[in-house]
Image (tube, rainbow, N blue to C red; front, side):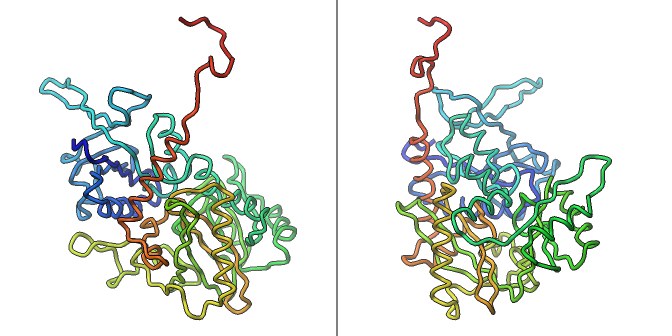
Length: 408
């Protein structure tokens, strides 16, 4: 191990419907690391929850790694507990001829979560890393858990004057019960500020437009809820925005003060920005592999800082994004998405992505001043180390005056 360089473990994949997207994001981050400062360590979480590492993970055309394709990988687990001997590490069991073996230690210095959605963007992984004493990049436990929940996010930022669409939340019924149709209709009537069909149904805690459906009547709404409940324990229902235009912007504090990137207006082939629009709209309509690496969100067709975006609306997008970033105490490179009625000019904050596709590096490359992907990865890593140092606090019982048992 080169002692002059930090080993950066980038973890991607995961038990999530956004598994494949996460692979692209993780590999992009590894490719953008500064080779003079860092050594990249890929950590792949398979769909069954098992952790793996190995150079074979770096080649896109090897995916998906089904069970019979993992012979070139090493099964690993995270060292739980703060071991002062070797610090953060992965454990890999090396099996011997007779079945036994020694445990190999794979040390690293910091982990970069690149898992989208469940298990990676919701605070679960961040809590695991904090409990294990592992420095990591990006948002902390509370910020991650708060922003993955669309209902909580909307209610929180609305309290600070940031505009959001009205919505209702519907919980998945317990086993043996049915969705209460009358209750949903009553909530729409009382909470939707006079809005009528069509509506959008969204899983409460997913991203990448997975599970999002437009509905034109109560029967379609109930069917969409049933689909959403396959992916999440709750769903939100929002009004359909006429003359819909979407704007996205990235925000970070990794360079010091809060900075806001260029604004993008994605092109969309549907009435909303679908998963296909986001990740399958490259020049040939599909994800490309090693001969022409897929850029994930970076391959999306878009206008950057569109000329017909009014100056006042641009200023509002930037202001609302920076305010939301501060209110929720975010970190890393966060992408914040807005909805707008192009005719009226109204704008609403839609959702916050704490681990956005491609880490939104393409928005920083178009920012003023420009930020390269390598500069971004370096800043996020350094911010992660600073956050780790800032979390230090005295935890001994003597310091809290809470001693019960005598100690030497």
